[in-house]
Length: 142
Image 1 (cartoon, helix red, strand yellow):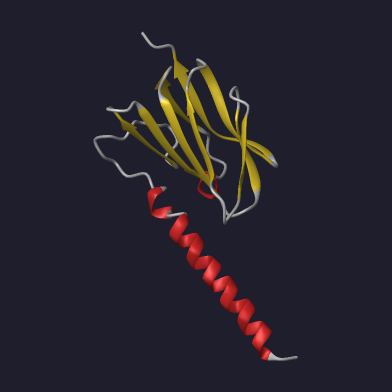
Image 2 (cartoon, one colour; image 1 turned 180 degrees about the vertical axis):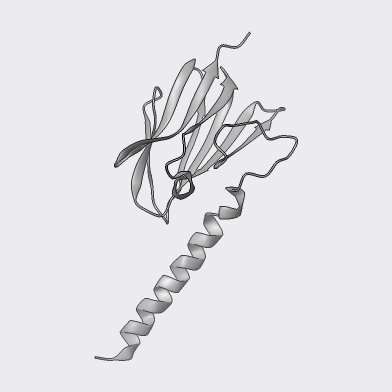
């Protein structure tokens, strides 16, 4: 067997790994304390409040959540939610109460963008096996 197909396969996987590292920047997932960070009980979720546009940005690395109690992210009804979930294993992520389900894998981040218009607690759930990784607590606006 020729070595060229093997080298081509190796180069393909190296190129794919580089592309994934470019398009899914994991350094944005770490929880950095800034003036714009909203508090969360889950240290694995980075949450940033942007006052001007009333957008809550949430990033969750499911490989770092582990067996810890899922955190709750609090927000007001009517705020925009931009949720990004990354992980190494193929799975699906659901935002309960909003009928939103997206695939996640090492190559594809699950990205959600919606208005939090349903008040109450909404779990962010990994479907296989079923596991709550975080929750949104949407409070009625005053």
